[in-house]
Image (cartoon, rainbow over all chains, first blue to last red; front, side, top):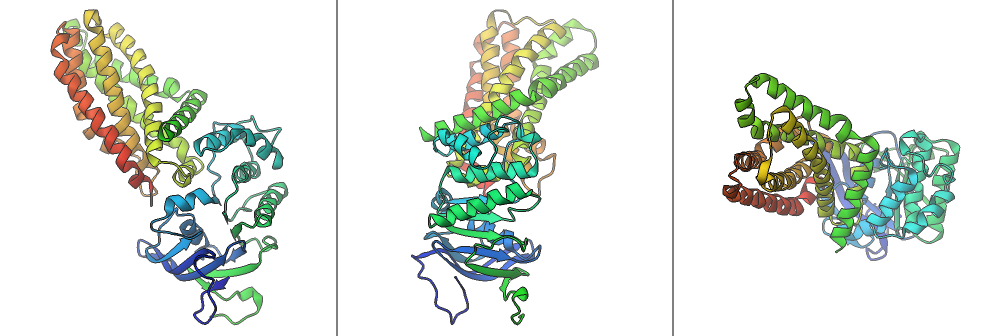
Length: 232
Length: 224
């Protein structure tokens, strides 16, 4: 990638999975993201680090089209953020702070619902649940699942289709080791088939497969203070 | 066809959750029954007055009870961020509105059946020969209420929303349904069902307007 310093070569827009230009997002009067320039090449695994409130979640929410930039422009997978929302959503998967599951449905029912809703083959649900080690608990209601089990269902949902861009926002938070390994396996599988991954986490033990690390603080991309380089 | 399939999938999911949670039976029906009993007690024992006020009390009870159903319909979407999933899903957002409206309408139809029986027993009312008019008014009113409630119920999941936003928005907008429903039901109970056509037509118009409006504007309510 290439972060956006003006003297660095930029990946041509048609080849970039993500291209942001001076993207700013303001909540009320509070800026969450400030003039962010970012290029992520197709097939790249990008790790985004930074303290709480650094703007990582806002950045991923904008890439996922959950939020719109207040200022600035950009594209994801070649589709502009402002006019290509539907096209982007067909090609991405977001695993975020919440698992977006229905508490009164079982893990299997949740995945079948998503498969039917989005036109995927519900026959792939059982295999997806097996791949995250949840076959035995597939018919239990999600209300009784641990956070780790919920996140594994979310990982299984992400495997139902093969997104061109996988966005993960603090996917390890509150997880047991088994669930963390399921997330790592998803990242590895996604990268292995040439898709792009953007992983935001402040867990220093994760993200080892990333090709590049980006550090954020105060809504801006800054040099990584843990890398020993000069701070801005 | 895709829109219908997606809406049907969402409606089936909502009804499955409802059957599991038994919210309509466990909470909304007792609430409607309590309202009817309280209304009856406040009016007093006079049979004539009870019969005359029965249509209004019936529709008021259903209107207030339906607000609970709208609120519940979106509660499940907020429990673990599921609404964000629906927003991000590559589907027509109108399917979410139509699916939720269909599920709420199905629940309200069950509620209507129970409440009509209760009103007949508590207020000594007989549907008589114009029962078809009452049923038509209830069904048309249900569609209109479900459309309004499913359109504005989503606002309860907004980070800045207040608990009272649904009743504040829905109750004033539902006044045409309330008036038309009460009038059509009153005429039917008085044996004058043949004169209720205008009120039923008003209910149809309301349904068409709010189903169309919801289909068009729902996307703008749920997006950033």
